Length: 173
Image 1: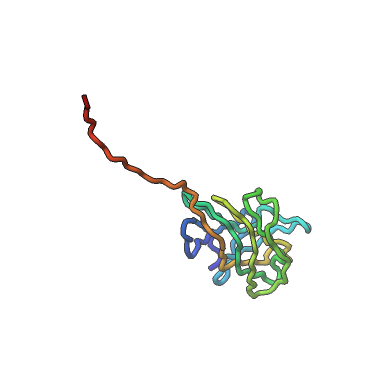
Image 2: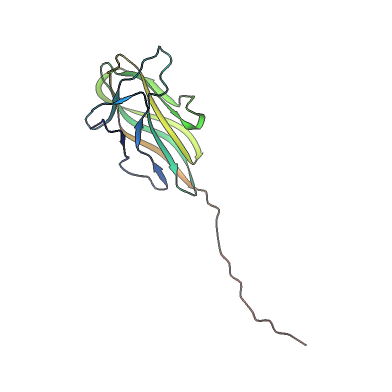
């Protein structure tokens, strides 16, 4: 439907947990066929954007594991008055730096985007995708098919058990 308050991942990867995707407090859910969509973004003057207008999801390693992220891929669609720029930021640096983004043309068709990353040795990361510079507060932006690529590493120390033969002591005179 697109206007759900959150949307669960289709699958959970081995050794990781991925949260539902949700919206930041300054965007409103909007209906969209087969995508997670929103509207009503405040439009501060460029080159800034509203830091409370985002889509968000968290990746957390299971106990005893950490993970690397090599890329994130997703499809997005902007309406004719929707956002024309987007950025991905993450919790590693408190969402202060863009780790990928682009200026796009508007339109009602999906575009596929692959963002190469080099994130290593993390136990939990929250990603935020910000879309901004909309032509109207009612312009929509939708996400679909978000995929995270990388590896998990078992960081548990090896454990082993050894047994020693047990002998009865014998006194020798």
